[in-house]
Length: 275
Ligand code: B12
View 1 (cartoon, protein in one colour):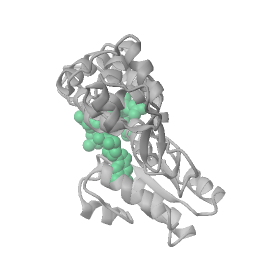
View 2: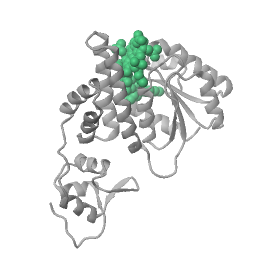
View 3: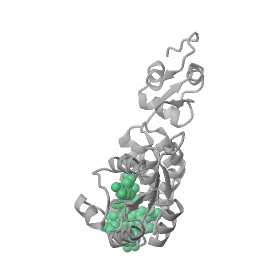
View 4: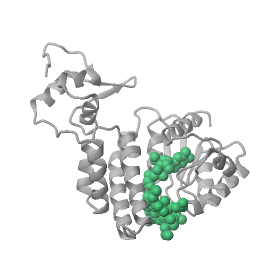
């Protein structure tokens, strides 16, 4: 490690990583966990050399764990209801929060669903896993918020017949990371509730309907229709695991479609600027 006491200007995260002799993502993990204070200036992390020095002088932060090990361990932690272990895994993997959602947490929950569907896990296991995942998301959530003035507003929720809230919560955070203010209404939201919240914001919003259960696709279409009766030009994005193609999204009345959650979140954030 080479931290020169004579220098005063802050350094970038990449340079901090080089000086610490660790991978860029490891340095980012130190920032995420608060081991290394950093400030975002013009979209770039800046680190004061004093803070770098304090990190190198203190006890070494824990070693990162690989994505493969993290995925296996997280699955066990979720199913056994071990929140402490789940948080330790999420904290020690070198991934940005968005990647933790899309490459670790969502696949672990999908696996829980697949193992429930084939009888390997019970409904009780699924509930336990959901509760732990919810608490992990609650702790990671604030790291998605962008500092500064919020640009655009997005209302997210699952339609009336859909009792899945985790997908909409994860997706809400992905959108949040692109800058807009996001209002998450969660699972089983009635068309009337969507209408009320859109009205509260004088329709200057984009509405996102997150559909996980295919039984709820009609409810999503009905909600979009109900909203457009009141606001014909409202941007309503309909997506999620149950919306399996661009054609289906279009048939349901979605204003937009993108092949991945990341691309969809970026497109929704961009649309919210013109709402
Ligand atoms: C946890 C869970 C539950 C929990 C939900 C708890 C909660 N608070 O969310 C409970 C126990 C309540 C539940 C209930 C049911 N469930 Co359930 N559940 C699951 C499970 C295991 C995980 C869901 C999850 O969190 N997935 C992880 C998320 C994060 O995944 P994701 O979809 O990849 O999310 C991303 C994208 O969808 C995207 N996204 C989200 N919203 C939007 C919106 C837009 C516009 C866009 C572009 C993108 C986007 O961004 C997300 C982040 O990357 C899934 C398994 C699975 N494959 O998902 C089954 C699953 C969804 N459930 C299923 C079923 C059948 C049910 C029940 C009917 C079971 C029953 N018989 O009672 C009920 C009721 C369903 C209903 N009508 O709502 C089936 C659905 C099958 C189908 N085709 O409809 C699944 C797939 C299980 C299975 N393998 O069969 N479930």
